[in-house]
Image 1 (cartoon, rainbow, N blue to C red):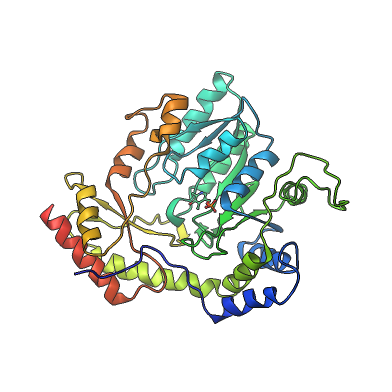
Image 2 (spheres, rainbow, N blue to C red):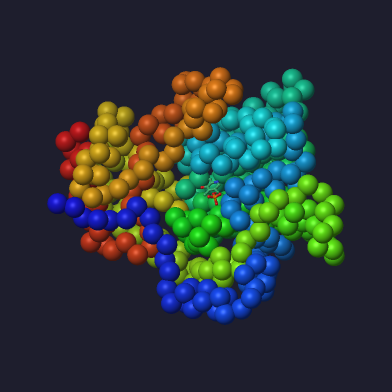
Length: 378
Ligand SMILES: *Cc1c(COP(=O)(O)O)cnc(C)c1O
């Protein structure tokens, strides 16, 4: 018997369809009025002075590191427990990612280890220039400690908030702590533009630089064929921006729907033997639910549980395989198992369940019953 439940799903209504259709009535499919409208909505929601739309979250991370002056020889500290893009963007600039292991509860950078690592690198004269914390699964990092460490050592902070639009740490929205932050709008995120991303910052100079870099290095006042720096085509098109405008107008609804589904899961799974529900730090004053990830007891064969659920029409994902153990990183840097024990232990046991805002309570029940049975027999 198959249940046919989707792992993730965008939440698209007639509001989105109508606005995208409106763009198609005009000749402005790129660089039109929708992009600045979308940028203003995101800046207002996050609480930054500037927002600059780009073609993906990955593109946004790349531009943030360029603005931070990261280049060959530089070192940037980040987490090995994330989507690969948060470390790859460091490689794009010819710099070296330095990983620091995670806190086993929040799954974010362990700030005590971070402090020790920064000091050790500084003591050996290593050119560590920036911190790239990731608010993994929509839970904010300890931005208080991270900003303290950055200030003490004069480091730039770029927040990877690609999974955390709307999250708050001690009452302050993520994206407002670092020198810049990046949001992403792939269809499985809290809101989508198809492909798309957004840089947010209070720094006027950085915002101007982002606008130039995403647009082939053209200057502000820019003559069309005058390129003052090495730029990229990282622009967001108007159809995607229109989708973004319509989604931002529904953003509180979208976040609340996901919150409700997460609450159903937690209520149903709390107390199920062998299944650990997501830990929410007391300092997380708002969780932004990107995925719903449970952790299985060490004795349970996670992959066997995934196979069994798949046979029942319930898709799951092993979020995340450690970045340092990806073939590219093993080959380039010689990483191997044992380098980041907390990350590796968590990564072996985590399981992302089907999760989106339109999941019904009955579907959540179906998933939970199947999970409970699979774990019970494992
Ligand atoms: C989604 C995501 C990104 C960027 O993704 P794109 O697909 O390039 O938009 C970056 N970092 C993390 C942690 C993500 O989850």
